[in-house]
Structure formats: C-alpha cells, structure tokens
Length: 241
Image (cartoon, rainbow, N blue to C red):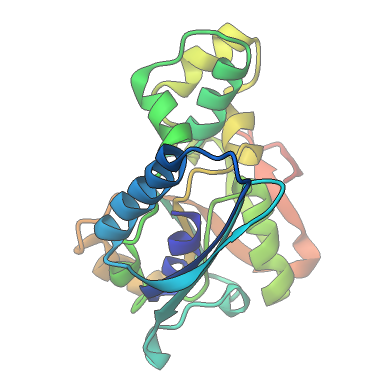
C-alpha cells in the first residue's frame, strides 16, 4: 500500500510489481504463502500484477518490492508545483494509525478501526484520479502532516499557514489521546502512516473539486516563503509548524 500510495500521490496508476524475497532455510512454507496472500489482496484491490522477481536463501527474511506505474503528462502532480495563494487540502482523516500504534505498543485497548488503520492501511488510489486534473502539488501523508507540508514547501520554495482547528482528526483519536495523556493533534502532525493525500489547489478549482464528491478538508493556504510555515490556533496565535 505504501508503494501504491507514492504513485497515487503523483497522479499515477500502478501497473506491475516485482518481488525479491530472501528466506532463511528454516522458514516454513506457510510463512511465504501468507506473505504472498497478503500482497495478493493488496494487488487485487489496487489492480496491480506481480510479473516476476527473485527468491533466494539468506540469513534473514528480506522483502524488496519494485512497483511501476503510469501517469499522463497533463496529470503529473509534483511536490514542486505549489503556488502562493493555493489552498491546502487533505483527504480523509488523520492520526488514526499513530494513535492505534501508540495504544497497542502499551498493550492498551484500541478500537477496531484504529487497529485496522495501523495494521492494514489502505492508500487513496480512489481519490488520486479526481485530484490529479485539478491540483497543483500533491504528496501522501506517510510521515505526518507537518513533515509533508514541509516537503511541499521545500520543493516549491513557499511557506504555509495551517489552521489547527481545521485538521480532520480520526474520530477515535481524542479518546486515545486522553487514555495516553497526549495531545490528539500530535498524532496527526507527526504520527504518519495515514496514507491520505495532501494537496494544494488554486482557489478557482475549488468548486470543481467539490462537485467530485470527494471527502476532503481545507487546512490553510500557501504563502510566500518569507512568512514561514506556521500552525495557527483558534485564538490566532501562530507557532512554527
């Protein structure tokens, strides 16, 4: 899913995959079969075909995947294409994977959805074809919202203002944060592995995107680089993102 998400974030469609597998001699056959069953489920969901690879003997289990895809030139989305004045948006909700991981690491009960968000993530390949014709820059949220905004700013030479109150937290994150004694916003900003799509959009394309019926939230805007990268609270106070 992580590999598919990288292609989706560029507006592309995954196509074929190579799998190189290293297994110790004592590895049960069932282990290899289970690994391929899991990859098979993801491949079928994302319309990917495994076309080859290699299987060899080694000291430790090692899995190397090469995924190839296609994208039309006019739908290619790069991190470097954000422009001052763009709106910043994100699909879905954030923080669920990190919150689920934090609870499980401490052997605390996690909701079924939080466990699934972390253990069986699903990328937003469904959203990419709707976004690609309309957005400027795009990236998937694999490292957390703050680093991903930073990557777009670095590559595009711009700054950003994010409204803290607009960040769409997964509905189970607040209770998880209370159990753990942590700030729920932290799971979205730095948690990662949500695999939602973060994008920048020219304001004139907003209505067209809304007509697509996609679940997305506007978080802020792209500003000149000199203004920095800021997280703005409900009281208007701004801190570095």
